[in-house]
Amino acid sequence: MIGNDVVDLSLAATESNWRRRGYLDKVFSPEEQQLIAEATDPDMMVWMLWSAKEAAYKMVHRATRRRTYAPQRYQVQLSGERKGLVQYDSQLFFFRTSVNDSLLHTVAVAGLQYWSKVVYGRQPEEVLLKDEQGIPFIRSGDRDWMASVSHHGIYQEIVSLKI
Image (cartoon, rainbow, N blue to C red; front, side):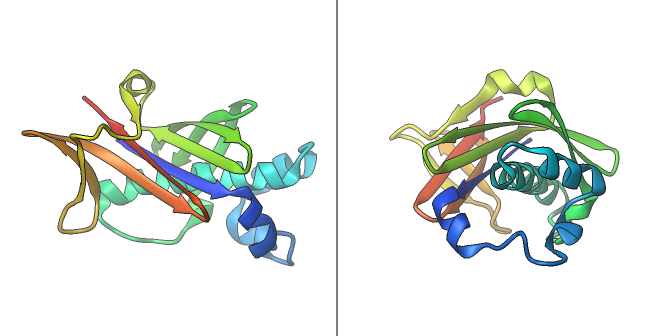
């Protein structure tokens, strides 16, 4: 499985006030709040943790077909500056985040073996479609691949898992 999330950092800086009272407690665990408090760039840490949770949520939604807002159930652990894992119940998802200009982009997969099969964007002959429940996939000829689409502000990213 695959999921992704993008954050337009310029838009987030003007439209979101994550410093307001109670926000961090609603969204982040005490351990995640500690990461934010100790970060050189707390804004970047907030959005990286948030996007990792969102990318994992997309995989859980794909599997369960349920839309449930429960960011506290997604626990992020870092294993590097911009990578780590997200635990949801007993499931583990691995993520990597990249930052370019004002775009923060996180991709998550359900197992380390899938990183080599992640494809960014799509080819002209590939069509982005959604199933009857709105779950995206890419079709090329008679082949279908899981896809994840994310957009925020001026950015949109499509990733697929070609297995």
